[in-house]
Image (tube, rainbow, N blue to C red; front, side, top):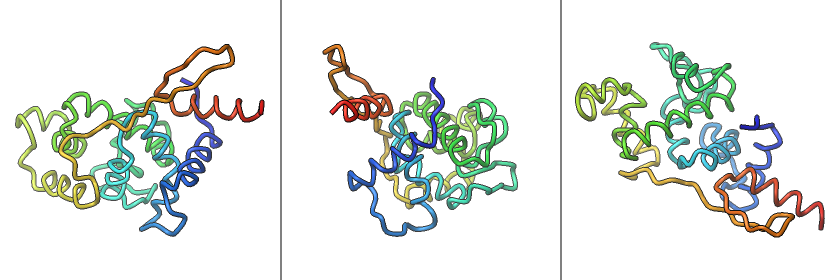
Length: 195
């Protein structure tokens, strides 16, 4: 996979702003600062942006340097083993942290058939706790966590994919269908240069 550049994230934020997805006014905390990264990651991995934002809000209140008493770090509060598993080298780098957290969420969505409560329980308490109890563990922290996420904005019982299918005709006249948002945007940029 091609390493994303700052230009890719700026493009994502710019397109989101042009589309009116995010107002230019100040947003609670520093949510606006991370909208571009979240938008790109949501589209790339098929995880709803509103779920990502809810998790960041509850986990770290948008503090990229947050460290929990249990050792979770960064915006999405990744444990060191999870960060390593998902290729995060610098947990305090917002882009790497969000991407690692979103990849983890994507795997949890697949594992728990998109069941929001089970995905959130596993994100908070771990997959082994969900397996041990055959569902949401009876931990007060985990039960409260699920409630906080839902009060923070993500209330759906099943996580729906935010992947869209993009259609374009390439330089050779072939119709291309893709769910890769960045590839689609690169095609549009090349086309615009030609025009």
